[in-house]
Image (tube, rainbow, N blue to C red; front, side, top):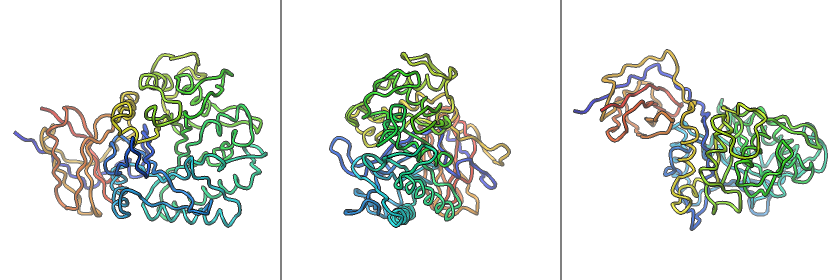
Length: 440
């Protein structure tokens, strides 16, 4: 006999109205077709990814500062709809700036202002609620100054430009724009070896914007070797490299340009390639990643020679980032979605950050349920509605989209028995949540 759950949502609240995915599974999504990692429509990516970095906004031909973006595998209207669909389920969809093949240079104040205007236009057009800074090559370079007081005009303009985009988004949307940065190791931890050129060049940018950064995800690949806080040299692709380089950006370190004060653990993610073919070097198999990150979290034994300076580890570590979702989806890339599955194994016994608000009102019957869930919507629902049913790990197991009012019915007959969370979103954000026990 089929049981039915009726959820009265009037007056409910959720904590996901302003997306802060924790633990974060961040994936770059590339806007081109690769034979080994094909173009993948946004609405087809694995739902475990809760931060999606769209790659890339690049300078228009003949410019180093006027940015442009256009989806290559979907129409603009389809792409905008896919971004909105992901956001409606509490995810962050960021536009990533630059990449390895698109240098950005803000050589004058006018170029800075044109960069800001073009990026605001892209964010507004496509409905992004995040921005990722992935500037590489000659885009970020220093000739002097210190971390706290940069002197290079291009660095100062970049800081000003990012701050201006953030301020404009908040003024227009009354929300914070989710900000991530994905420098290569030389630009960050490389500051321990030298401070000049690309070495340590991101450190003034990170320092100036530390209160705005949601996640720093230094690329722990295509790197070679780097020093740890203990003065030893560690090679990419090893547990020691992941642990040493991650602790360095949390604890901070000395450079010739002054002290880099570390970031909070919840601002730091471990960034790795999805498989060997996704990067030129630095891939580690899932077992090595599991051991390294569990040690960083304070939940596992020391996996190598490097000893954490903070013996208890960092249980608030934000999560993992990968290049890329497209590669992770490819079956020839270490198995389809092996990176997402490993994230689930690593963080599976930690809180998801999707916490229920104490004191909300709801009516549920019968509960437990076994086959069907009916969700009764409040009269104040705004536009299209998404019902998400997430498991104990925060992974969305079922999503139903509807423009109807009144009741939405969701089939749950194939879900494993256990505790789930039902959340409802409209264009204003998350408008209701409650617990659901599936029992047979």
